[in-house]
Every structure is written in C-alpha cells, then in structure tokens.
Amino acid sequence: EVQVLESGGGLVQPGGSLRLSCAASGLTFSSYAMGWVRQAPGKGLEWVSGISSSGGGTYYADSVKGRFTISRDNSKNTLYLQMNSLRAEDTAVYYCAKSPLAARPYYMDVWGRGTTVTVSS
Amino acid sequence: EIVLTQSPGTLSLSPGERATLSCRASQSVSSSSLAWYQQKPGQAPRLLIYGASSRATGIPDRFSGSGYGTDFTLTISRLEPEDLAVYYCQQYGSSPCSFGQGTKLEIK
Image (cartoon, rainbow over the protein chains, first blue to last red):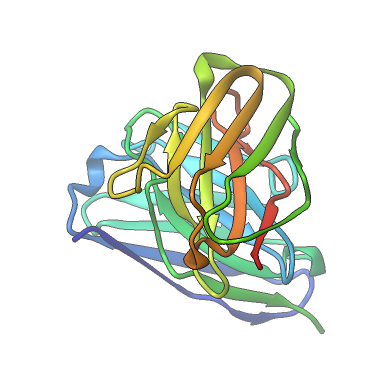
C-alpha cells in the first residue's frame, strides 16, 4: 500500500523557520512528482509547492515564493519543505501528496494525514 | 494564476437525490486538466476525478465529472449519507496549480 507520512510541524514564532518532512513507502518514490498542500483552520485547500520526480523542476504558489523551498532525497524516499520567514497566515495543516506522473505535480492521488504548523508569538 | 469559483457554497439534499456541483475557471483550463476531491470531516482529501471526467481508482460510478474550457461539473447520483463532505476542484494545467474554495454537501 502506498503511504506518505508527514512530520516536523509545530509552534514557531513569526519570522522563524521550520522544516517539514514526508516519508513515502510502498512505491518507487523517484518515479513520481510530489507536492505540498495546506489548509488553514476552517478554510479551504491551498496548493503550496511541487517538485518533479528528479527534483529538477520546482514550483511554488506566489504566497510562499522566496520563503519556502521544496526538495527531495530519492535515496531516502523523503520529501521536504523548508519554510523560512514564517508569518501568522502560514498557520495551517500541511499535507504531503503524491502525483501519479513524473514531470510536475498534476493532480494528487495519495495524501498524507497532515502535520500542523502554528505561527504565533 | 487561474482562479476557480465553485458553486453553490453549500448544498443540502436528501439521500437518493442527485447533486450537481459547479466549478468555473477564470480562463480556459488546458487539456481538461481539472480534478475533483472529497474531504470528509477530520480527514485528508481524496481524489475522485481527474482529467475532468476520469474516475480515480476505487471511486463508485455514482460520481461523474464533465466539462471543458472554463466550466466543469461534478455530479453525484443517488446520494448516500457518507457523501457528507466538502468537495474541491483543482486545475493543474497551468502553474501554479489552484483549488476552488469548496462546496459543502449536507445530507438531510
């Protein structure tokens, strides 16, 4: 069974940094694009960032561009999201998700349960 | 960025009825690159439809998608109580990807 499991969420002060991880199992990780989607409390889904299967292509929402960096380690079957200069509006559940294709994050066919990031002083 | 607008915001129907959910794009979605997701309370989203009309693995045929260009529809025939959820559309034809704001489906 294909599974993805997020970790690394927590409470951080405004302006601080946090790194999320997503461990994948049950699949050939290096064959698929991956992405991060977030959901603020009581709000809808917001696409955050995506990365191609090789890591050579990265994509960002305007709201996080220049502050967040997506990366992957195919030898460890792990996806990362480095979040810097965090703001209160970054508070959300962050979902890791798998795309069924390699080139870039298209639609997402496998989702994790999410990890919560709270930005507050 | 393509903006997706979903309507109605909330839909309240009885079991056995048919639900029609709309997703309208601010510009044409290339290659019908439109997906639908279901998010039940307290759960992660689940993929229902991709390519505007293809059902994902394990999705019952009560769920169907249609449309092209800027207008897309998710239809749920014969509603069941477990269909209570928020439904989101997503376009992935243009970068950055974007989601609609969601339609909440209530079962009477």
